[in-house]
Each structure stands twice: as structure tokens, then as C-alpha cells.
Image (cartoon, rainbow, N blue to C red):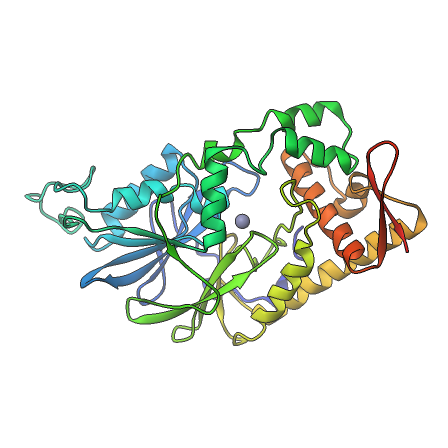
Length: 382
Ligand SMILES: [Zn+2]
């Protein structure tokens, strides 16, 4: 949902956006790029950080884009023109969603030095010009994936199967929360390969990121901040030196982060976890420049956190009220919560969000849950 208090945020870069295949410099050695996405949310922001690993100068990439030809072509343009002839040394991924981890396997393979020859698409060592500088990868150099262990393992699982992303389990989960329209359920059942289609592979080894871990990227230390409720173990990266927070999807300027219950963990309470994670982010300096995965870099982190808290408090109050008037299931709350026509993709997200609000109220003892004779969970006043 669009942010009604967006004017409280500042966009220091103005309306500037990096063009396809190009970058904008945010700070010395920190570059912003954008890749297209095949969803209603049509772009993702990715970041390049000047790096130094095992005695070699190069770049760290933060987040990857989905696995398709357009994104790969876009990356090749960036490699050719915006890396100053240096290699990519590691790939950091904030969480397991397809727009973030999609091309991780391709990128790490593309920049690992197992082969003696220069990587494909690279100009000949004899060619002149800046963009044509050869990049020596060196034998046995591994361009490693860094990610939380939970999201690494879930990505591995989801890429090789259909866990939590559609199929029969998702359809019966939604049905148990009142989505009974046969046509929608059939489509959800048919979406079993949704995740693997955008994440065909995940690297087989990784470097584990954990809350509080500080990693040296180039000349600066970046501290990992774990966030819950959007992904199982989302990592945001804060650089105190530069005053930057790569927030991933945990804090976005325009839209509220998706916080959903999904079929693999039907009794989860992601909303309470998400709000607690935001609370912890208030410890970061108020003047931090936030680099979000969607939208533009902004300052006003504390204001944005306050807005998100207010937004969810209002939602929770609405849901509580509706359930006090009569017992409600998640599907019948959609019209009240979203106030717009939703396509199937948006409906599944909205259902997840509706259950997240219901579960938060139920698990904190403010609503009662019952499984009725028709096989649907309804929530009512205690
Ligand atoms: Zn995400």
C-alpha cells in the first residue's frame, strides 16, 4: 500500500535513477543499479561495493535480480563498463526471494576462476580502452555467496522443489482461510514451479551471515542486522563509516514490506516479528541514508519506521473490530484491508498478509480462532 506520509522522507538523489546497464555513485565505492522485474513491482535496486578479498581488488555485489536473459544482459553491460576492469569478488544476498537471489548461481559461477581463460563476453586481452581491460580471475578463485543460513537452505530447497511457493499445499492453506473460488485455487495449484522458474539454481556453498557479524568490504566495515517477518532470516547491512544502510526489503520508502503467513508455517506470527525487527533498527542513527531494494535511496529511517508501525497498528485495529462484529476468515477481510481490485498474484500476497494480522491478534490472545465445520478458520472476539 502506498505511503501517505511519504513527504516526511527526503530523497537526496532527487529523481535521478540509474539507466539500464548503468550505475549511479552513492558514495565513494558504492554504486546503485536497477534491474527490471516481471511483476507489478517492476524493478529492484542492486548495489556494487568496492571490495578487496585475498589480496585482490574488485567488487562485491549486493543482490542479483531474477534469472532471465534481460537481467543477464544488463549485468554484462555493467561488467563491461562500470567495474573499472576489476572482477566481482563476492555476491551478498539479503534474503531468498527470487528477485534477490535469482542470478546468484550464475554470478558466482561467472566470476569464479576455475577456468584458465577469461570469462565469456570479456574483451580480448589485446583490445584497447578502459572497458576492454582483461580481468584475470586466477585459478581456484571462488566468488562466494554470502547469505544467512536459513535463507540459503530455504532457497536450495525451494529451487529444487515447490516448497511454500504454490502447488497443492498453498491451495489448501488458502482454502482453509476462506479462499474458496475454484478458479483461483486451480491457478495456485498450477503455480508449483513458480520459484524454480526464477531461481533455477543456488550455489552449493556459501559464507554465513549472522546478526551482529561485521564484515570488511573494501575499506569499510559493514554490520549485519537480522530482520524477521518478511523472509526467515533477512540480512540488512549497515556501514557506520559511510552512514549507509542497505535495507533490503525490511524498510522501503513507498510501499509497506510484504509480511505474510505461508503454508509451510501456518501458525507463524511474522507481523510481531517484523515489528520487533523494526524496533531494533531504531538504534541506527537517524541521519542514515537508506538504500532500499525498491524505490529510491532516502533519509528519514526513524520516521519511516514510525509510519510502518502506525500503518500496521491501524490494520490490526480494523481487523480486531471486524472480528468483534462477527467471526471472520482471512479472505473476507481482503476488501476492507486492500480497498482495490487484486489480481491472483496480489491476492495470494494479500491473503498471506491478512492471515499475518489475524495470527498476530490470535497469538497475543486478542482473538480466538476456531476451525468450523466447513473447514475454514474463523477469528472472533475473546
Ligand atoms: Zn523480499
